[in-house]
Length: 90
Image (tube, rainbow, N blue to C red; front, side):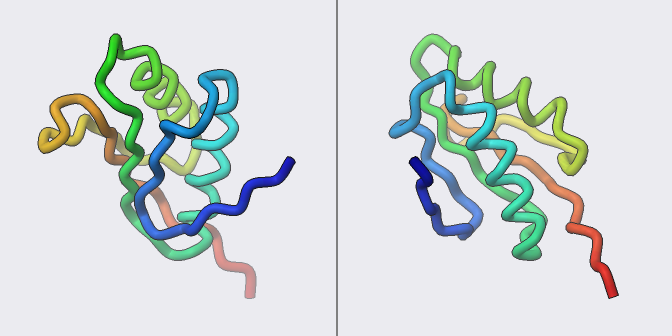
């Protein structure tokens, strides 16, 4: 099933199963880069840190992600990522 999400710079991952998080995050990073966004916020919740770990491992391995860090305002409940712009083909 395809789920369409708005590409507005913030993605709440609570609705997704942990097994789907890597593909959802990777696709969101690509879509955000294509939309011209340079920074995104991924809301994963605090809990035991399982979702946070999945998100940050995915970001760490994504070629468009320049840097990522915990959003201090959310007390480890969200991660912010800086992304490189998508290549333009003229």
